[in-house]
Amino acid sequence: MLRLKHDPGALKVIEAAARQFPGNLTIQLEYGYAVLKLKDYAAGRTAFRRAVKIAPRRIDLWKQLGYIDINLDDTDAAIDAFQHASALEPDNQDLLLQLAYLQDQKGRERKAAVLFHKVMSGSDKKKAKTGCTAYSNIRGLPPKLLPEPWFSEFYTTPEYISRNNLGVGSATLRIGQHYGSNRFIDIYGLGRINADTRSGSQSAYGTQMFLDNYAELGAGIRVKPLADLPLAIYAEAGAAYDTVKQTRPRWRKDLRVFAAYYDEWNMGLDCGDKVKILGGLRPVADAYADIGYYSRYDNMLTSARVRPGIRLFENDTSAIDLYGIAAINWDSNGIGSNRYGELGLGIALRLFEPTRLVVRIEGVRNLATSGLDYSLWRALL
Image 1 (tube, rainbow, N blue to C red):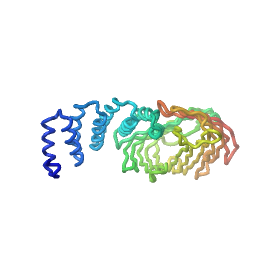
Image 2: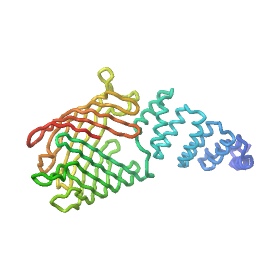
Image 3: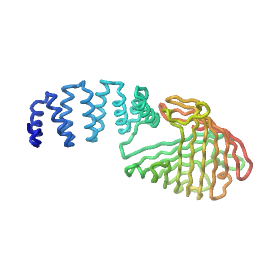
Image 4: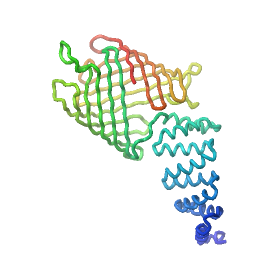
């Protein structure tokens, strides 16, 4: 009667009734929906927690409780609520999607990938495509180790080069924090190592050096100026140690300021939206470019590379690509080994699960700006 008269005292009456009769579902829902209209999510959660105890097989109540937890920024509680709902209807794509997004939000990429993959096989094709796209983006990614806004990343590219019978290993580790609403700025500490299998050996001409062999500790800042463009600008400084002795002090300062661009086209899992040619073959491509100043070499270095190709095979967890290579390297000091072009062919085995890994074999013709051209093949990981 008070509610019909728009009397605010109605809420006090139903609140008192909800406390007095915690086992009455109708009263708990009356109170719960009333306080939700006022955006009192804490009181709403109390009411719906009582409601799911009374009617634990009501999917709609678990869903409502989950959405309340989301509004309260309690992601773990929301996951628990949607897991209860999903257990009652395991094939419900809406519930699986919501759970997957929540797990991804918590940095649990592997759990999220499993859920997105389940959505892919559902009957609703639109939701299946959504799940497929999300799965393609996160498959093989490890769970996030550090809480927001912290991040960690590791990059390595071991390689064998036939021309010099040379194995090369390089790795970079960065640990830091994101800043800005769109992770616009990263500030981090870093560790870096570069080594090959032949530098340091002795010959009639003295100590041989094929590549720069060093280990470094430092710090850096990375800026991503445009949200829709995969371009990053870095400034990094540290102290580097020559792991192979040369005719200079082993410890040297290392400052590098550079920009790097990398993008892929048509590479992700085919969710029904990829470009096809020649009766079903899928063209793929990636492009990379960088330019920067490196105090260690007192030199401005730049490189660019494109790898257009076709996808020969693909399933949910792997793919095989055949591609061409066109690349160019340049420097500001006129050093011949830094100035060359490359043309060639390659094949890549892409593994997406249980972790992302690409194995490549490439054969190229090196077009030198000084000296003779030469051919080589290389295997990259």
